[in-house]
Image 1 (cartoon, rainbow, N blue to C red):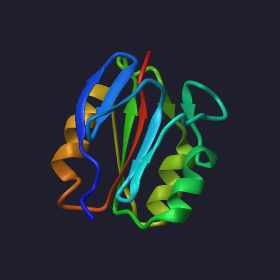
Image 2: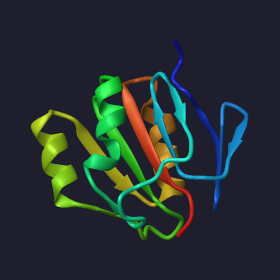
Image 3: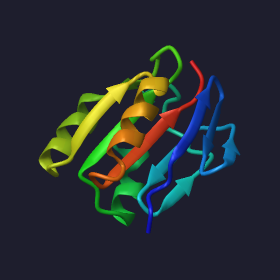
Length: 117
């Protein structure tokens, strides 16, 4: 199974494998999960990604924090991923998309992308 590929990202839009998504998404090696919601819109809590991590094994989580990088990652996320031996990369979404695409065929990567802000 080939991991999903991000074709393009623009403010509020992301194309993955030719499909347009206009809401925040999670990408795992197994597929794309649209309409991703968080407990707090501009903070990433571990509870926001727990379900996805329970469905797949990953080496890395790439976090797209929005066009202007306004979504913040809580310490809880950093500590929990470290305890599980999972690397994390946190970047504004356009850069996070580039990193995800570069690494998706080398590692088992999960991407979580905030598309606005």
